[in-house]
Structure formats: C-alpha cells, structure tokens
Image (tube, rainbow, N blue to C red):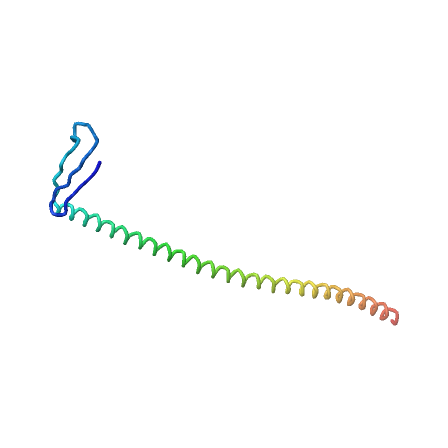
Length: 125
C-alpha cells in the first residue's frame, strides 16, 4: 500500500495491491487537513499525558529506591551497633565467669580455713 499527498490539497491517495470488494486497485480517499491535524494533536496530547504518567512512575520508583537505601543504611548501622554490644557483653560474660571461678576458689579456701580454725580451737579447749 502506498500513500501520496500534496501539500496544497487535502487529497490523500491510497494505492493498494489488494483485489477485494472493499478497495479497488487504486482508491482515492478525501481527508480534510484539519481532521488530520486534530487527530495528530489528540495523539500528541495522549502521548504527553502518557509521558507525564510514566515520569511520575519513575519518580515514585526512584523515591522508593532512595527510601529503601536509607532504611538499609539505618539497619546496617543498627546491626553494627548490636555487633559491638554483643562483643561487649561477651567480654563481660568472660569476666563474670572468671570472677565466679575466683569466688568459688575463695569460698573453698574460706571453708578450708574455717575447718583449720575449728580444729585449732577444738584442740585448745
């Protein structure tokens, strides 16, 4: 199918190779220039509106990405803080276990000393 048009006329000629009941091998279709301009303007407006919607979707998506990155950074900072806290608590537990062992030794030593004192005091009476 070929189209030809003249700038000075509003005549559009459509030539087809179709041999059917709808179009003869060469059919002329008259279309007003105003009609074509209106249709093209409508399509342009539709494209502009579509572009505005797509741009808004892109902005929304970028904002979601930005918020997700901020949340990831906050979570990473919180994770780092918790790792440091765990390390600190692990050190405290080791110190407490050491103190507990020292305390058990002191209790055992105290009990031994009491037993010695009891023996000594029983022997004197």
